[in-house]
Every structure is written in C-alpha cells, then in structure tokens.
Amino acid sequence: MINSNPETQLGAIQRARDLLKGQELLVLTGAGISTDSGIPDYRGAGRVEKHPLTFDEFMGSRANQARYWARSYVGWSRVALAEPNLGHFALAEAEQLGMVQKIITQNVDGLHQRSGSKSVLELHGRLDRVLCSGCGDILSRNELDARISFLNPDVYQDQNVEYTPDGDAEVEVGKNFRVPDCGQCGAHFKPDVVFFGEQVPMTRVLEAQSAVDVAQAVLVAGTSLTVNSGLRLIKRAQKRGIPIVIVNLGETRGDQMATLKIHGSTSELLKEILF
Image 1 (tube, rainbow, N blue to C red):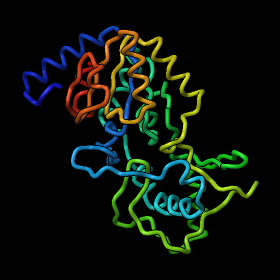
Image 2 (image 1 turned 45 degrees about the vertical axis):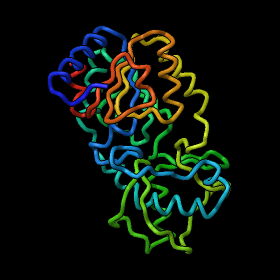
Image 3 (image 1 turned 180 degrees about the vertical axis):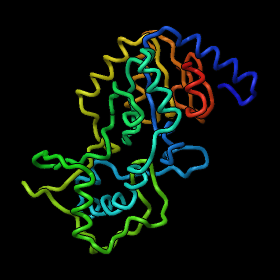
C-alpha cells in the first residue's frame, strides 16, 4: 500500500499512468467514489459498519417493508440531490477521450451518468426506479414517494437524521405508517436494487465478465471489494494477468491481487492518474 508521503504518492501516480496508458480500460467503482458527493459509505474510516435489510428480510415481512420505505422516504433526498464530484467527471472525460471503455459500478446513485459517462453497467441496480414484486410494473421513485406522501401526510422528509449510502435514514418508523401496493396486481413494491443476500441478475453478471475478458487493464476506484460480485471480477482480471490498479481510502479485499494499490481519495487522484 502506498503511504501519504508526497514523493511516494507522486511516484505511485506516475506508475499508475504508465500501467494504464494506451490500454483499453475497465473501471470498477464503489461507494467511496460518491462520498465526496455527500453520500456516505458503509465501511469508510471512522464509520460504524451498517447492516441493512437482507433480501429475505425485506421480501418476507410486511413490517420490514414498511420500515424500509419509511426510512428510505426520508433518506432518498440525500441521493436525489447529490451532484457528481471530480472523480466522476474524470472518468466521464476519460471515456469521452476513448481511454475508458466501460464503467462497472456497484453504486445505485446514478452519478456516473449524471457526470456524462455513457457506458455504465449498474451491477446492483439504481434507486430511482421501483419495481412491483408481482407483475413487474415499473415506477419512478418520485411517483412512489408521491403515493407514500398521500398515504402518510404527517411524515416529513426534512428530518435531521443520519443517512446511509443506499438512500436509507436512521428514523423511527411509526406503527401507522402505510405502504402503497401495486395498483395493477396488489403486490408490494421493491426498489430496483440488489439487496444484500440477493443474486445479481445473470445478464449483468455475464456482461460484467465479458467486459473483464476484453479489457487490457482494470482501475478499481472507491471500493473495499467487500461484496463478492465486485471481488469476483478482480479475481477474473488477475487470472488474465492484466494490470490492476486500486485507488481507495483504506484496505480492500483485492489489495494482494493488485499490480498497484494507492491509498487516497478518488476525487483527488483519478484525474491525476488518467491525465
């Protein structure tokens, strides 16, 4: 791991440039790239690790669904109002110049697209879409929030609370909180995201694997690689023997597989590395 010594940091940045220059680059990002946009991560330095609802907990309990939507109704504004930061813009510019071939993100905030990136695979889905668990009807998040507001006029979104990266908020959920159901089939709604314990859709898995198989180098930005869906891609890249550069604040599960690991902020370092 590269330490904070300026000379060592500069040397690591130059080596990263050398490893990635002229390569068809695949980028894998995680929550750490969005922290400077005001969206907290789950495992960042100094944070108490959070344990959100699992897929089975959400799907199997009406009370858990009410808890999720009540907390998310308050917390969604943090994601909806977030703006891309310098790290997002650096990757978008690199894509426009033909340097980045694809971004695979574990984030659900949509900030890569808002910064101008086009070739983005959202491995875990995105929060601004809602699905019916029965008929598959799709709603925008704004439409669902309007329904929640109608059913729960006394719930306010401007509470001073702690937020999590998945648009959740640490709020108490009243027993009378009402959750809207699908008007087509009566089933409950689910955010269009992959919950902890839920399988990533196979179409996305295959697309991600294909992207690794054609890449000439991989840049990992802002993820601890704790979630296996991302770690498996790095293992696949390692088996191919292509360069792997990791930029992250803190250790990752892929550090031993990396050609180069740089400890630092993605918003500060990505432009220096890419340009």
